[in-house]
Image (cartoon, rainbow over all chains, first blue to last red; front, top):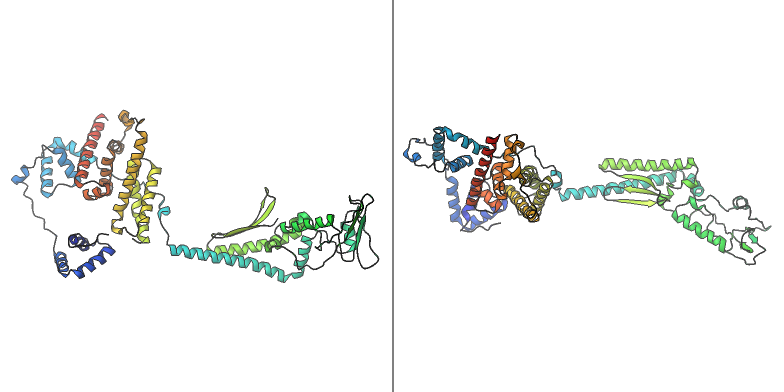
Length: 361
Length: 161
């Protein structure tokens, strides 16, 4: 911005009078006028001037017109006429000259054709990309989106919690059934689940010990199963799968202990193995993520019917999330995707600003 | 200049700047890039640009960006450029618009620019001088010379057709 001084104030005065002065310049000018009251008076005088002029008839027969050298500089006068550079007298005189010289009309019309006209059909298509949005609006949109996302998550988990509260027993049963395909809880179940090459022996006492002897080996491995269940590996989420592996290791390397139960296992490579399985019936220490507990990907351990029940829960949650998305005017997705490359199923939650996914298998 | 005024400037001037650049360089993608660059520069200086003078600012920025581009490309093409237009056949031109386009292409870059600024946007000599960084008298001379060249070309083509 140019600083107003006594040497350049006229320029600002003219802009001010013509209404073309910017807001900053106007403030600067007003401050300048306060400091220089004599110039304020000059400005008032300038504003009072009447710049309009009355048209006066042109004396076309004046001798002055004859002095204009149209003949020598005909091209220049044609262009000057085209560009509007001729003053009133010159223009009038030139037009009279042209009227008296019909042979010159062709040249004059050729100059008129050199005027280029813009093609208004050509437009710049990417105006939207050029335009800017207010930061405050963007921030508000971001906050609103974030709140909508939070609300979606809250609804999702409230649906899940309500489901548990409404059917705690069923949920527990489903949870156990989906996590436990082979459970060593009683001698009968052991008999059913353990392959036939394992021989089960019950002690008469309350202690249930399982002993396994082999003639080729004399070593005895003892260990404890910390988990109450032996779980199919293909029926669990990752965390449960790791736990299962640990359990199996303990089975092989150590002795299996079960509460008051002993299993005598035959026909394995170890000559003599004592397995003790300690059975714990508590279900409170299960390790599963909330989304995994929704049962979204535990289809391998469940019957078709159970899978449908869990899919219904997912549908309800997805519906809730979609409704929130519609209210917020945003696209919010909750969907389950299977990735054949990693052989994992993921539950993905996506919206503007926040997105996460959890592997469930 | 405020945000709203900037967006109004986009609506009011982007088409004109685009047409002006496109007519000069005949390359739609490059013309788009130049327009975008010009508005980006305007946005970066939005605080310092007066809304009343934004049109001049945009044309000045676009013109200078275009001149830089033309100079860069001329350097590349100096050794293998052939003036194809010199061999063009007159029968290719069917109407005045095409002839006029050819006449424009035969002008020098600076002559073409000043003529387009004059005809497309109706700028006066002083405004064109500010945009092109020339003096008023230089602008006037360029325009007059350009008109004469164009008139000669159009007259020549019309006589052939």
